[in-house]
Image (tube, rainbow, N blue to C red; front, side):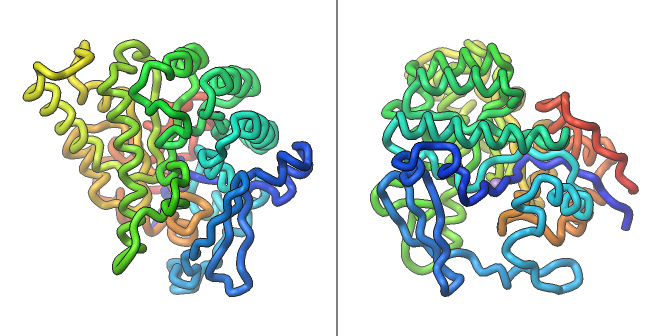
Length: 374
Ligand code: MN
C-alpha cells in the first residue's frame, strides 16, 4: 500500500503541566482547567475555576494498530512539537489544525478576567508551538465571556500569527451565536481573516452535564458521544439563520470532529424551514441557507464512511479529513488503514480535495503536502 498524505482538520496539542503556574499569578493559575488522573487509570478529576468533576476515561487498551498491537493512550510526540513530526510522518499526517487539550475546557470558566488572562497564556505558549513547523496551524483560544475581550484577543492573536480561533460550540456568555451582541466578533474575524474553528463537545459545563456527559443510563457512552456531535451543527445553524454570512460573507467556519455527512442534511432542513415557514422567517436572507453552508462552512471527520459521499455524491466540497491526533477518538496507529479504506475507491481529484485541498483553501500559507504514493 502506497502512503497517503493527508492534512488534518482536527488535532490537539497537549499543554505542559506547569503552563499556568509559569505564566499566571498563583491565584489565577490555581483556577485554570487541569486534569488529575486517578491511580486506577480509569478516572480523572477535572478542576475548572473552583468546580470539580470526576469522569471516567476511555480505556486505551481497546485501541489496536494495524498489526493488532494495542496502542497506548498517548502518542509519543503528543507533548513535544519536534517529536510530534515523527509521529505525523509515520502516520502520513502532514499539516494540522491544532486545538488545545486542557484548554478546550476554558468555556466553563465563569470569571471574564480569569478567562482573558488564561486564554492569553495558552496563546502565548501555543504560538511558539506553531512557530516550530509550517505544518502546524494552532488555534488561538478566544475568551468568549466578554465581547470586548474576544475582539481584543482575536486581534492580538492574529498579529502574533494565528490563522484560526478556537470557539466553543455554545458560548459561555448570556447571548447565543444568533444574537447581535456578537457582531464585533464577526467584524474582527472578517478583518483579520481568522478562521472560526468550532470543536465539538465544548459546551460549558452546566449542573450535572459536563465534559461530554449529557445523558445517563444504559448506552450512556454511545449516547454521550452522539450528543457531542450536535453542537457544531447547532452553532452553524445559528450563524446562518441570523444572517451572519450575509453581513460577513468572507468568514470561514470549520467544525472539527463532528463528522461531515450532517452538512447536506442540515442544509436541506434549513432550506425547508426558510421556504415553508417563509412568512415567519426573520431576518430574511440574501440567499438560501444551504448556499452559506455549502460555501462558508467546512467540516472534518475521522472514520465516517458516509462523509466521503457527502462530498462525492452530495456535492459539499468542504469535507476534510482529520486525525484527532493524539486523542483516543482519533486514528493514531491506524491512520493509513483508515485513509486507504476511505479514499481508495474514489477519484484522485476527490481524494485530494478531502485530504489536502479543502484544508489548503482554509490555510493557504501551510507547507504543501508531499504527493501521495497511490
Ligand atoms: Mn479533536
